[in-house]
Image (cartoon, rainbow, N blue to C red; front, side, top):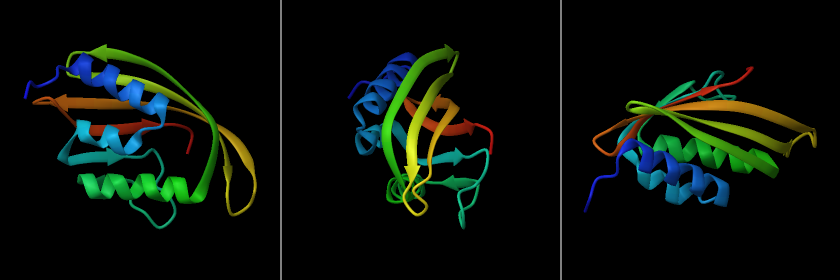
Length: 123
C-alpha cells in the first residue's frame, strides 16, 4: 500500500467531509491521533487521544445536532500541515435553537496519517 503525502490526505479529507463520509475519513488518521477543541463539549475533555475517542466526539456531535448544511473550504497546505475551513448550519436537538458556526481546523500529518487536529472557533 502506498503512503499518501500531505496534500493527497488533505484533498481526500476535504472531499470526504463534503460527502458527509466521516467514518471513512477516520481511515486517514493514525490510531493514536490527537484531537483538540477550542472549547470542550459539555462533559468532555478539550483534548482526546486515539481513534475511538475521536469517533466518540463525532458521535456526540451527530447525536446532539441536526446539520442542515455545511460548506467545506480548502485545503491550504504548509509543509506537513494543512488547514480546512468549515461553515456549519445546524440546530441543537435539545433546544431547537438554530445556529451558524464557522471554524478552521489545522491538521498535522506524519508517516502518511493525520496525527493531530486542532479546531479554532469562538468558544
